Length: 295
Ligand code: GUN
Image 1 (cartoon, rainbow, N blue to C red):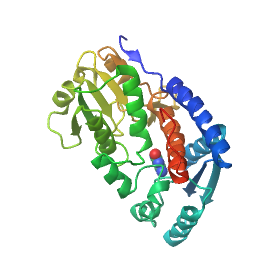
Image 2: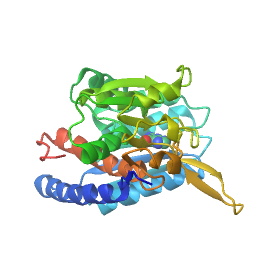
Image 3: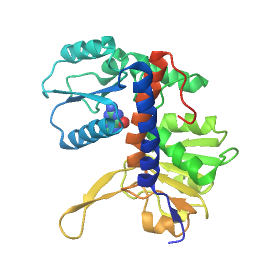
């Protein structure tokens, strides 16, 4: 391995420590803790793990966590009623409805119902639009985490060639917008892209967010490139158990790249740290307070 391994756990821990100070200051200034409401519908084990981790991190940062769990057969109208209640609750600064939702619920309608100033996932079309035009927005957590790791590793990203593989609303598209905001030359590649390896070979920065285990190979990578792996895929291991791998063939790519995020321990921890950050950003804006330096 020649590439530096980008330590997302360390970066997230450092950020969370700073955010805890900001949360204390918010509490002292306003007389209340910033609050994040999470909503989990159904029993999906992976979603349950994620939502509990988000609640724990919220409390550890000195914020209030309101967790709502609804049965898998919840009707869309009942979920919309809960969202309306959370929108109106002054103690709630951020609302996160964990996706995916059960089939009887239209996710787009639910996301649309969240007050844009409490939309800490940054999924509402108002925030998507604000990000696109460069206005003040709440920005999706995973892409924010990726940019944090990239600027920490590389400093100024201006002028670099970035290839984002994947065009989802949650990662690919906002990632491309953020990189454009950093003055990168941005390409979004996807399942219909012709000669994907050749496109990726142009990149100084590769962000892989496709959900296909170890798809990005070593011979796709320009020597010295920085590779950010957003994928979290569970695959069979040799011992009959399972293991987590990213969208990048780590060992191969690490022989060529300049720096690479591991899975686990790369982008994943940054996503939760950025959720805490977005909750504090929302809390400050709602309270009419200036955001502290560096938030
Ligand atoms: N499901 C997987 N990732 C996410 C996320 O970032 N936010 C929400 N709300 N649901 C998810």
